[in-house]
Length: 387
Image (cartoon, rainbow, N blue to C red; front, side, top):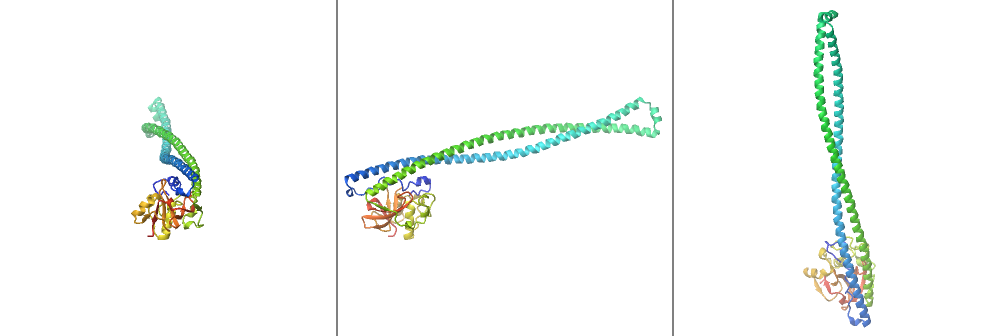
């Protein structure tokens, strides 16, 4: 019955499970001494089982909290890894671009060096011509020329070629020096980028390792939680068995009752889907309070919006605050409330003669619909929604 919406569903599931440690206490005059002793033993056993169930639930809640914390940490780490991967991709692109520029610089240097070599060969030819001319007298060179004019032209040409080539070689040498500087800078940039990439790769590796460890720890907590839930389920089943035995001792008539399960609109989810989601009244499905809220709406057209304060044992105070009558006298169409246990228990009164009441309910047996006939004293209050 636990309808506190801020509680985990695993807690809520106990709402109509752990309340029966003292629920079966019809007047002792109806029992023999041996029967009363047996009833006391069953109630004590039910209380002990309820305490163990609550203890396990506390452990489950701790494991849930730790698993959730680790899930958040894992999500944060995954985001960090994604950022690192984006940085890696950016660095890779920068490195590829820098490598392309570096290769271009090497090609430019080779091309300049080739021009230097070619021009040097030409200069060598010019120097050879000068050497030849120096070894031959001017008169002989004039005599060997077609004309004096051609002699002068050749002298001017050699001088001009020499000056031009010298300027070109000097220019190429300066260009080569600039390219060598660019080459060194490119090498430094490449080295720095590759170092950054290596550092990022190591950080990413460490984050991936941390993520794997975090996920493993999370899975471990979830596994432990599942184990505890299985243990809790066994205890709950044993508590149900004890409660049923006590009910039989009190001659309580418990049947599956109405095949339509009281018309409860969420019956198709029960019992397996108990507490799996919230109904339209803000209460968990297949719980006793969810069914009671449905019966109130079905019979009186009243939609209860008690949600997070909707535990069965909170209903009397909620009802009084809303102006509904709360009494100890049963009548048809009332909601019967048992205050025992952590969350209490709610049932719908189908019939009463003033002493005995027949109620329909959910979650007497976990998540299931049932009809039970008991002494009116089993319930502490009866809430009238119809006057």
